Amino acid sequence: MKDRTFLRIYAGTGAVYLILSGCFLSYLFFRSEDIGLRSAAVCFAVFVFLLGWLLLCQIRKKLSAFAEGLCARIDNMVNGGKDDMPDCEPETLAAKLDFKMKRLYQIHLQSRERLKAEKQEIQELISDISHQVKTPLSNLKMYNSTLMERSLSPEKEHEFLSLMDTQISKLDFLIQSMVKASRLEAGIIELKVKPSPIYDTVARALGGIVLPAEKKGIKVSVLCDQAVVVPHDVKWTAEALFNLLDNAVKYTDPGGRVGISVEKWKIYTKIDISDTGRGIPENRWAQIFQRFYRGEEVHDIPGVGLGLYLSREIVSKQGGYIQVKSEVAKGSTFSVFLPNESI
Image 1 (cartoon, helix red, strand yellow):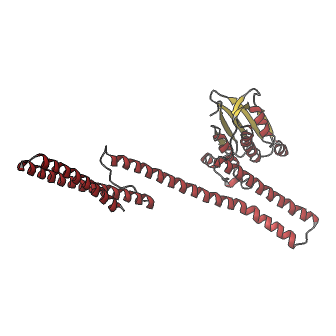
Image 2 (cartoon, helix red, strand yellow):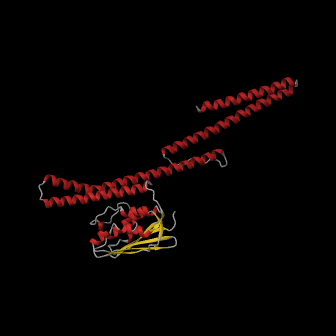
């Protein structure tokens, strides 16, 4: 098809040239009887014809080389190879097209790397989920088999049913947390950030940890000015603060203390959640915000490792961030920074 197109161009150009040359020569023959002038006109016509033919051949050579290079570059892109094609001469149409092709190739590589990273992340997520779900499911199967195959006393049956209820609650919490995290990551949940009293949000978060704190004899203190107004999503910010407070209660020994304080700065409003719990080694401060991460020393405490990850996602999507300071055996302080103006 490419050769046929070139042949048509050559044939058309040659036909136009022959017609123009014939008209010109006919005009000379009919208008002049000078044999020398006629001979010069014929020689000039032959010279121009040969020059035109050489020019067309050169153009065909250039076009063919450019087309072959373009096809080679496209094949290289399709096969995922490196862009090692030589650069064209600057300030030419080929150079402009070459620049666009390189830009397209870079976008293609970036997209491929992004898809590769997303695929890897999905595989890791599936692996983490299967690992988290495996233990409660195995326990449920074991308890159920025991109840079905053995004759137990009412007290023992009640004990097994209570254990099954605990595993079901753990599965439910895991699934709910994963749904929230995935919806936030996918952008399905749109945070409704608007100026609201942070005091009400803190109170909403505290409501979920009052009973667990009372059962462990943990004293909870709050220092927050009711007049402080911060742009934030009340529901999801309360969720983030609750996760931090829930961890503070879980990892603080009976009789300890948990405190929450709010301080409005010039650019950010700082919300500190402090405890007198086990503390976190400094080399793990970054790891604790990873999805499903749990330290080896806290496996005896119920949890799935999604709370801090979810809190960070919620806060970061509102333009804020979370910092942690901790000392082993003395406690931790998680500081939430929310911008004073909507992003």
